[in-house]
Image (cartoon, rainbow, N blue to C red):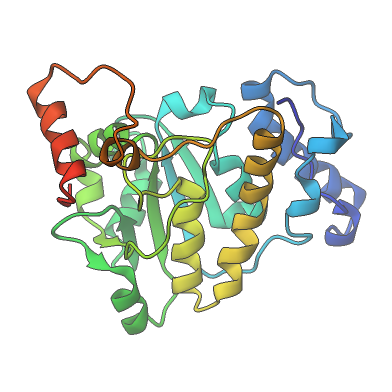
Length: 267
């Protein structure tokens, strides 16, 4: 589907026409490259416009997100980061695109990674549950989230020494993904937007944040399903129920990962 992402009722949230125009272009710029649309202030087609599902005003949060986006995500039409960015103030959601990040090219990011209040959201044996960190934290935090497939995220995390500096945190596997138009590895894997929504609600101690950010994602999935898209079950679900219809990988490491999924082994 082709649609523009323009914030509804911009005039209510902006003090001047110049600010209004700047905000609109900000959102449109995010989507124009991926969808091949021209810059304009009119949403189209109206029946699949996401504006009514976005917050009228950007959410007021003290936590700043740094989204580290794999370049391949830029070309995906149904990505979630633009929706996330549309829900937050520009200074609270910063997006950096690339595979390799070093202090020479990204001095600001290096400073952020050395900040004791910075967290990086990436699951693993060394990660602490975010709820435990949030209880002890009283000052505004910065959170780094990697955006990409699981293999892309793993590559970025382990091959960039800067990302080993912040405290590593993870989310409890308590909810299932609502991003049903894209296949997830396991039943508890979440999209970048969903991770950010849950994390912000925990850090800000405000459950309504999660609901607000998930609203446009739910609408996006609903529109896609109404226009012919199919529900994508996780790879774990397909394997366990004998529904996986693709050739099994010949690579022993990938085959072993699939066996672990079937046997409920954490990977």
